[in-house]
Image (cartoon, rainbow, N blue to C red; front, side):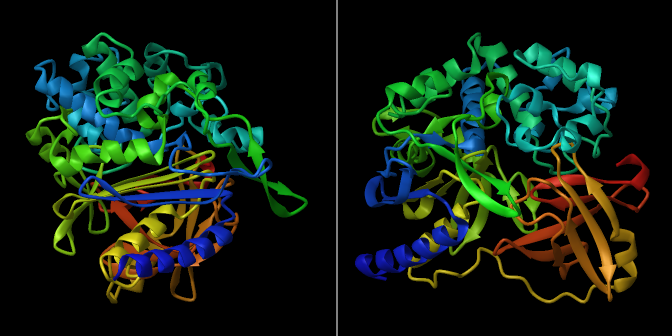
Length: 485
């Protein structure tokens, strides 16, 4: 598709999607072979003052930060200071879980691939000021179900983080390496390892060894740095007002240095396209080598299946058969942030998309841009799903309530022989109480259409063959009894 044609088609789609999502601002950048191909801002970084969003607008990255954390680990491995296969207890001897034997088996690699066996936990909430969940009523806060009131103390250091984590009431999902379950806590602990091994605070190490050599002058973990930048977003949030959703500016950015490694870097589209060069070139940004080719290769291997036919490397999702190439990507979502990074190294394509409202479908817009640029239909999905003749006899085994320490709460019911997901989560982008029919696509896997996107839902069996957890939003959400909820 010709340049002008794909751009106009994309912009028409983007305007429609952004209007539907109610995002105040969205900005997209595309590079080809390291050179700027497309830059476009839609809407505003500050609606009240009519300030347009630009490729230089500083915004949160949320979990896109995780690839920086893994890159720091790989740099320390190159320096001979650690190995990704070292036991976690080598560097964090005070770390505890409910299962000592499994704890001793956990390696840095398991944290990097979200496969340590940790379920979604609420400890991050105590380390983050102004969390998204702070907007919930006290009785709806998920932390109360997993941690005694007297143990719910603000976390300011890695030591306090590990201490509180040891007091949380939970069961391991399985042995290390057995299951993928997205773990912010695991990545926060990687930050603690980086600080321990390097002798520097995590945010200082990343600044000196990644941000500065990669030419990312507008990137920082520190909210105190934001006033020195001329172009910074206002973050926006939704609240209920007399039964209707109201968009409003929220002055309180999420902040917490003890958990910075899991998702609290702030950056711009321009800086992030410089960063993406590391994966396009095999470790270089201009003439600066940030990482060895071998370390880049290790980061981008499909180490573990993270979702139906989707894989995770080190801080990156990996699609190894993307139209003859490899699609590397990662998204992020916290209060006031929707972010998505993607790279197709074989074809020299790098993209970055940012919006200032959580829930904005930035991944959908990224995939549409890639499709259009490469001559495909905009809505061609990353994966296609065939029909699967699932046995309805198994449906009753799936039925139940599933609750996580991060606040995810869903029920699975059987209605007229149709498996149905019901959202009980107070902060979902969908309406609370909304029902979604599940379409079988493979053994123990189903497809759900939520908020205009296709999501896969899986069910995980325990050693006894009984359904133990719901694989949803990249998390293993444990099945609970009504009395425990």
